[in-house]
Image 1 (cartoon, rainbow, N blue to C red):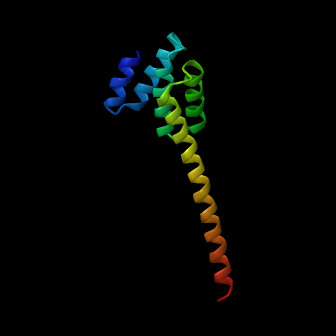
Image 2 (image 1 turned 45 degrees about the vertical axis):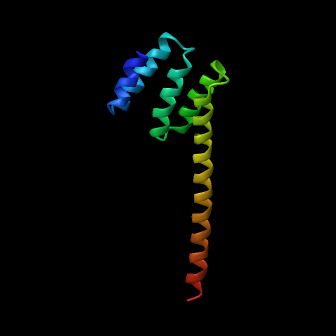
Length: 103
């Protein structure tokens, strides 16, 4: 199932790939690479909490897995960056409101 999921993902069919990775995990829940592959798809779909769960599951199985650590770091980084961008946008809106009231 896992290899079929990789083929489907390579062909651009993320939905089928996710289904195949999930089936692979049903058969073998301790397969860290399947958790990581599913997390990649979930992350691409902006389903960060679910992606995080899959990466954490992979790390419980394989604590030294570099790919899982890297993808989890990317996930955390994207969240931090989004928070920073939101903070900057709020500051900009506040500044625009202040300058608009002075006219």
